Amino acid sequence: METVVLAAISFLSIIFVGSLLALIMVCRHKYCQPFGFLTHQFKDTRPEINLISNEDVTDMELDDVRLHPNIEKILTDEQWVDDATGLIPHCLAILKKCHHLTERLVAMMMTRVPQQSNQDLNEIIDVAKKISPRVDDVVRAMYPPLDPRLLEARCMALILSVTHMALVIRSVCQLRTCNWVEAALTDMEENLQVLREAGIALESTSAHQMNGISSIECSELNPSELISGNSVLSRNAVNTF
Image (cartoon, rainbow, N blue to C red; front, side):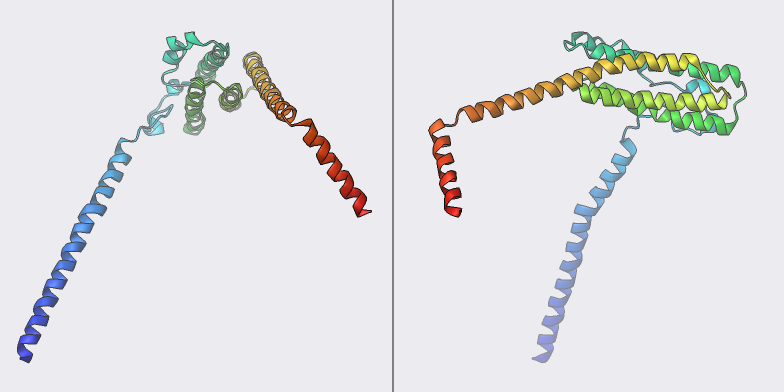
């Protein structure tokens, strides 16, 4: 009798352990493997938007530095023609001026310093890589609905990135001043001023609308309710004294 009981317990234990192992294998196959596969796929196929490719910087040339790989396509895109706000032309003007300024800075660098050291080249390339995402930010802000405050902030960030590159190149070229760079930055300030004024006008309009809503809500109150309310407050004040 005892032998039969032990045999049954052993048999059930084997079935239990086997079922547990099978369950573990199924869960691992169902949850762990697809997650790792998707992670691997996401890592391999995620797009990288860089001004400069991720190759070894020692294999790169200075003339690879540009404002954005698709700057010509952005500037000539016909979808900007339908703008009715008058803000898009100023954004395009800033993009175009930054593009020309970048090209002129690179040309000056190649002319004044024909043989660039790896340190100087790497520094310029590192700064240039930060410009392309700023261009993408400006283009995304140019799609409706337009917010002039956002446009101003994005354009300002782009101008600051280009200014940073100008300062680095001017330092490498050992120039104390560069009048045409300052003139280009001043010219872009006029376009920024238009965006700034549009943002101020938008804030003023929003404030007037909020004040109008508040006035309407106050006018909808019943004057008799206001009088009775004031009477109650007066009686309460007298009673406290």
